[in-house]
Amino acid sequence: MSESALPVSPGRALGLSSPSEVADSIRSAALKVTEPRLAVLAALTSTPHVSAEQLFTLVKAQLPSTSLQAVYGVLAAFGNAGLVRKVEPAGSPALFERRVGDNHHHLVCTRCSVVHDVDCAVGSAPCLVPENDSGFAVHAAEVTYWGLCPACQVDLAAL
Picture 1: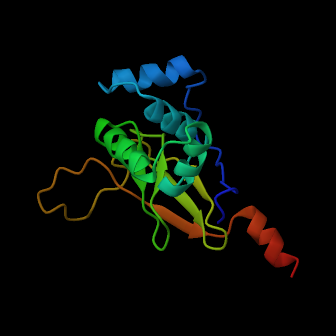
Picture 2: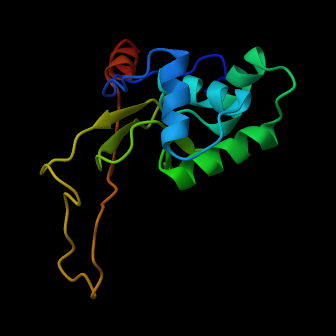
């Protein structure tokens, strides 16, 4: 997928609509508010399921002096603070999203790689429980559903 064609999935609204709300979110995670952090979190809020490289492209448009390494550093800090979630679909680059803490899952198109959020099938986390937990205290389950998105189904039917 090209960097200019960033898919935006209809995930749950994140409630951050102004720069001050983005800054407050960073502060509430006990992190210092910096321009790169503001730019990365704003981009993640408006464009869910985005790779670090795609984020770099978005952030660099606002902050030309930003480096890819700086974006990775911001993502690591945000991940440690619980502000972002890293999603790693098989065969694709890692994606980052702002929707955290609800143990939701993902639908991934096997043709175009678009990613959509899907709520837990059962409700509350961990949503799925292993038959034998080997003594673990399970607190989350990750599920990825693979298939064809509606647009790709239409495209293939037209062939």
